[in-house]
Image 1 (cartoon, rainbow, N blue to C red):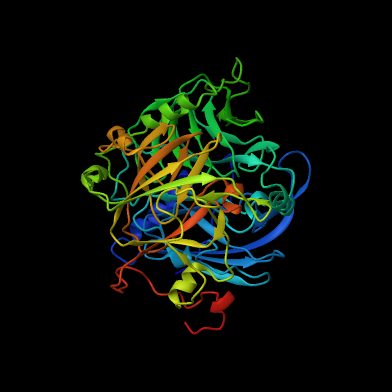
Image 2: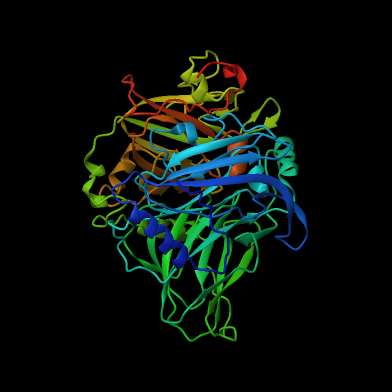
Length: 546
């Protein structure tokens, strides 16, 4: 199999040619083993200039943001990461389910860090997935320096998407940005327990991204919030946004003037270039943030020579109820196929009895004189031995099994390494209770889930009467509004050790996370793969045979 390099990142170029090439390769290999795509990434420091002044960034193959991966459902991705930083490093693949393979998840609970000067080769598959995903550094505050990028999974030729093929697609990595480096931000968190407001917003690492299309054509815009902590709203001057994907699943195709995208989330929408040929503003602005920040890109009609008349499109009201109502309008398209031929709605999630309920409340306690973040009073502390290795090798006194109460119990704030033990094929209700006056964002590795309800105030069992048990939107990251709750249902069909965390990276860093160990006593490759032969061993697992 020849080596295939990732396409260069460009904010101003659509990808019909690259996509056509990917699909031709996929079609030519139909009936054969799923194709392999090989990447070698060298991670270095380098100068970047996103906000007008040079600062040190984290580059992949000299690029900021990192190279975009374009692949097809079920492709095998082989990514050799060479760490030339002065600190240990890992990459996680946000939204990629890593079926039976949490060994490749790239977080501190599953993988030993790649030491400076060393490398690790990730080997994983885009199994039964399509859609818009991202990757980013998962250790310390490296994410604040760069090292993130897009991972787009296209459908196999035999599996149609529920809309005509667009003329091309654009990737928009939108997020907040700080002038301070990742080491300085880490020191700030360690000392103060919170971050200041960000200094700016970026689209694809810059403040002047451009997207070029032809009048009369329709294009797919893939938008991901890759920031540290800030929700954003995205809109395009004089153009409507038809929502066609939410984190790898197909929603009912409602049309919006603008869309809220919270930290860690991704959406894709169709835009038809049906206006006079001008340059139109592509606007992203902060939501519910003390700092009102805006970044403006350009949708350039081919041949246009002037800006569209009129002001920039205004954002929606700064009202949480407005945002919650928009979130409730996202509905699962029951008749559309996803990565498989069967319709999404053939899985009747609302008819399945739940096996248990977890109610997880965030808090910001002071522990040992330092401000932390906690879940049901337990603040996660990363051990020197990854939890997955400790479990695999039966290493004692690393994991605090089931130490996060199933519901808030008023216990004293405390540090720990909590892992909740759940059984393979359980069907679980999880309620995220937000106890603070800031919007939260929660992500679960290894899965997507149905967001069956949002609400204000304290969740009670009576709120189940309000759940959407028919066509709730499936996704991997859910927002929780201030002093409110969000409820999800998740089918635990993917064995492994999975990180359930705040997608707001300052909160995750300060301990707002835990792990779910989904397991069965029946050991089989049909359930989970063995430890990789190239796994890095560290901590108390160092030197053990595998």
